[in-house]
Image 1 (cartoon, one colour):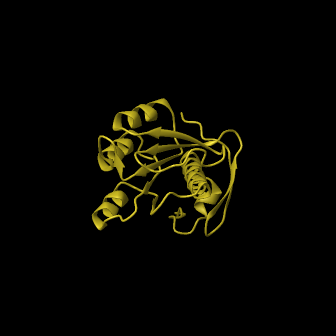
Image 2: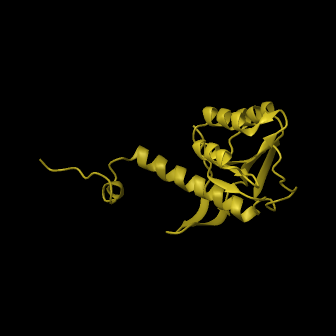
Length: 166
């Protein structure tokens, strides 16, 4: 069972406003040449770095990450096989791509592998923290719904089939 940290985030209709995590910094794995500067996040992001595919798999075995930030290239191979392996190991792993001048075929590939967001340049720490907060809040809501399918809030949602009295 995976422990998800307590998140202080406010969910509005248009976006999730990041307020921070109470118990630890957000864990983000940077894969390949992402250009992440040292100290980005000011202690609110616990960065791990992997420059080769073997390092990526080793990092994923050691710890859970709220988000994976991938560059277009990795030292020993293209990024796509690595992301396929990441998604095979952890199907629900959220990831973003940093790729300036992305071709149409590369964008289609990234979207087919479930990319959350594609950046043209290195995002600031607030954008990364917003992605992490959104991933955790959505995961928590999905988990609560799966564990409590008969809760009144679930049945009252528009778009869901309502039980019919016979």
